[in-house]
Length: 150
Image 1 (cartoon, rainbow, N blue to C red):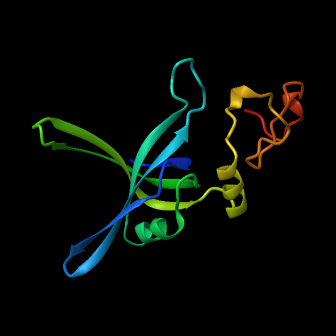
Image 2: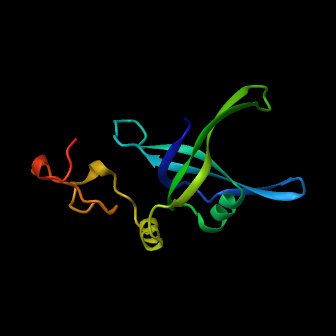
Image 3: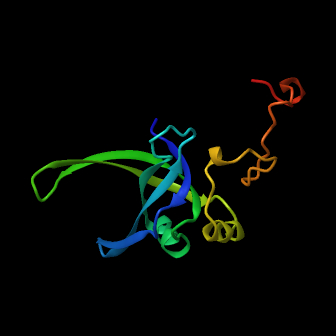
């Protein structure tokens, strides 16, 4: 099974091209998602930059509504490929072919986040509200009081 789900922010506005196939135009949108890593190690980047490709109506939707900095969720499949560049070298590619995409935050939250820098998780003490709609559970809470156990 080849299935991937990502949540991240667009690094720039989507690039949209139109391909003519059998007389019909097909929209092709390409964008890169910055997906935060769960843990930060010294000297390592804190995000992975993952290329995504959407076709047809999904591409048209991305062109109309997606812009740099917006937080989205992408569902799709990984596709690898290769080509020979102008220097004759083999270049390998990995893309996520988008099957479903949607907003991960409200328009107001998106506009608010684009106006102020986002703090890294280890730069400040956790608060009760993590800003993503979930509440951090303090270490002092006994697990037996939670409605689920792992």
